[in-house]
Length: 194
Image (cartoon, rainbow, N blue to C red; front, top):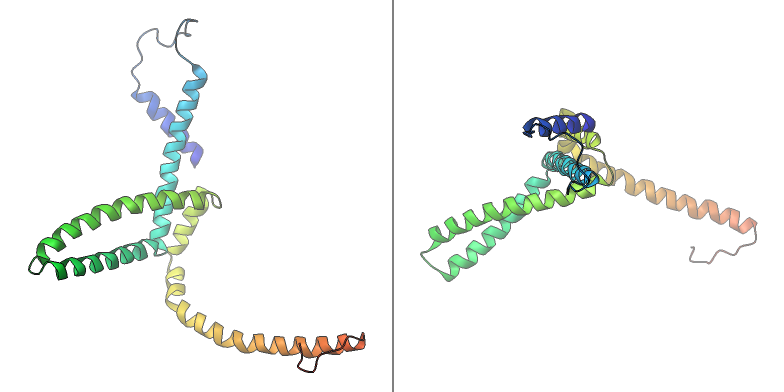
């Protein structure tokens, strides 16, 4: 998919360049044209486009798993706290305060979300390819993922209820069964146990 994207960008780039007659001739020795530098610049353009594409799919994933919702929720909590303090200090100015604060929170949240997504794209990029992140998006938007999210709290509670006794039984068995073997090897078990 990335290779097709690179070819598409290259074709698009070439189609937009107006070439003067004779411009495709080999550069003269005294020209400032540096072919290696041109390739590096073009490769950087492709990587930037690829990075933007990767960040966009990570943004979709973050939205699908609820990070965007949580991010906005925390921001709105801050907004409400600031507005309450400002309104307490400025009685009768609530409408003006809310208007300005709403506009600012919208603008700032958009900018901060974009910066956060870029950083998270770097994090995901260390572990997942573009295709893998896309698969994660598809999974998290699926019906089975929605069903898991709905059942998750109940499943976690039941898991804790089952795990506690299982872990206590495992510990009791470890103490008693290991104690028997240790005593056979002449190791003294303290009266309070171990």
